[in-house]
Image (cartoon, rainbow, N blue to C red; front, side, top):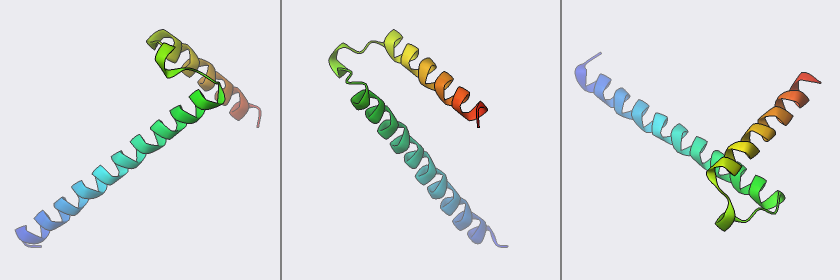
Length: 69
């Protein structure tokens, strides 16, 4: 393969990796929004310790549900 083809493939790979990263961020944001909405939480009063606590509780619930399957 010529250097030019390698550079083109590298460029495509970088673009694909960025697209994957963007999609992961989009999913994370949507998940967070849905949890906040479902729990009737207020963005204005949500603190970092509360976010961490909620995250741990959701993770524990999901892990428990997964283990019970």
